[in-house]
Length: 117
Length: 115
Image 1 (spheres, each protein chain N blue to C red):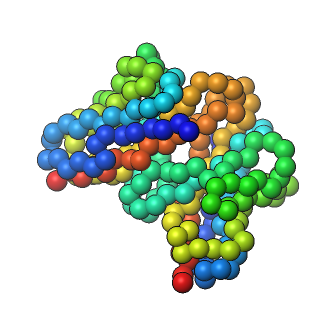
Image 2: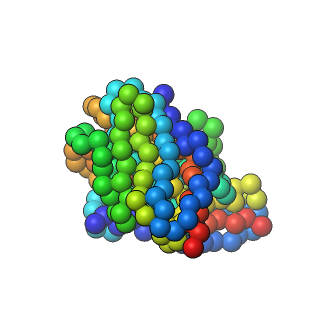
């Protein structure tokens, strides 16, 4: 089946630093990748939709200058949290969509736990 | 706009008993419905999906879900719960049609199965 990986699985950083999270589709090409944020005991909130070779589309309320998304290839998208602050601490999950029929679906990565001190 | 409601924050069931996790949805047009399971500090694992066809959908780990169009529901069920089924369950919906609409998730229901 389709596998999506994320790296790192967890990261601790100091306030003010930037952190990059990678999302890779391992056995398929993903034209579209999605980045979600999940707070403890809450649902997944879509942050942005990333299309290969074009700018990401951010959901309302998500700061695009703070959460930089790059989808440089069909197998890799990165999320960079710039000038991270404690309130950015969260569980970040990516998913990837393979091109195909209208019934295609998203395959989720294992998530990255970010803790900002 | 599309939305998903999971009315129960937590469902408690004894091992061996049947379980139901409720989900209702709202979407323009025909729905494309999913159930996912999440274990602590892990990503989402796909359980099952409904597109068209039989209203009863069978998925992974013995789970099934029943699509009810008139009640706009897609409840997750399992005939006999296992302790290992204890996890957080998410229902999700997207509109099925031309183009691609994003997934909308419910807030999640914690399932606790006691020995």
